[in-house]
Image (cartoon, rainbow, N blue to C red):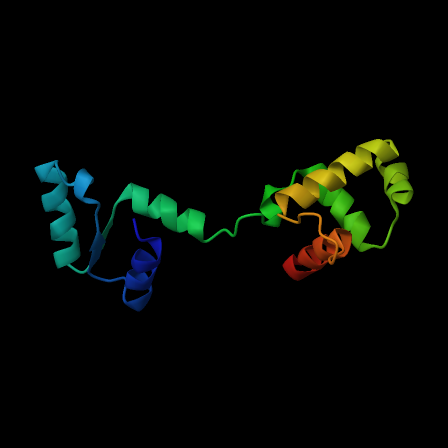
Length: 130
């Protein structure tokens, strides 16, 4: 399915638009109902199309993939705290903080490279979302 095409179609004029997948129009009553809605200026969208559009609107590796604890750790990282300074207020070990930070890097798609500082990149993403 071409998610970009469906998004462009809806963005141009959502009135009188239908987007159904051919494998979903086998039920004649559903198809006629969708056709009537589009003809009267409404919309008819296949549920799978809607799911893809909603999935496409969320960038992969966004902050919404982080757990509440990981967000806390990232927030403290953004304050410039060391792992030790993060562990204290959260009442966890430094090793636990290291695990949370590793999860944050993974979820944000920040792979280890010799040229980038992942901690800074994670904080920048956090600040951009605020």
